[in-house]
Image (tube, rainbow, N blue to C red; front, top):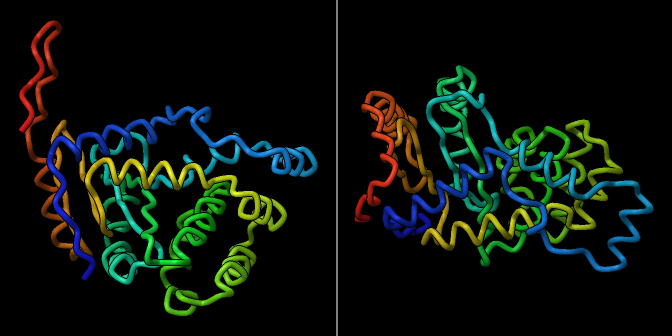
Length: 250
């Protein structure tokens, strides 16, 4: 199993805060890497607004209603076998019991590990699918077929095939992947995870009622159920009073 160091609570709070910004669509697109002249020419020629691709991709990697009382931040790598185990066993039950019922929402954070050579391209395929509101359809396909494309030189071509099977606009998908429209989002995800002390996948941070919990690895559904139900039953953390000193950090 991929070893995951347990982040300190203050680090989890920093990633949770970053997740809240993403969920609120408050991440400024000015932080994205500026394209070179060739990419700018390609953008003009294709008529694609890269900023709108970024904004759609941000929204597309969230599942569940905005009003959900519990937020699950998933830090994952499409080429990680333990992430695949979670995605193919626990995630469908989590989706059915909590995401589709409005009891929780999930934000996917990319952490393509350096030793997984196709992980970044897979993340780009998923985020470009997100720009067409098909992130979770691509998410499911990538994890279901991971053993077919992992380690293969033609992985990018396989991802295009999945996009076609999912009914994506292929001109937009190719423009997105070939011109790295969402690469800055993936890099930012990885930097946020690294800043939180997370070095392995999968990792989950759960927030609700002003409280927080974390789960490491491909844990079974029952552990999510216990954590979510515990957060749901806790009294809400009191809001800080104006002028009050900040609570001491652990």
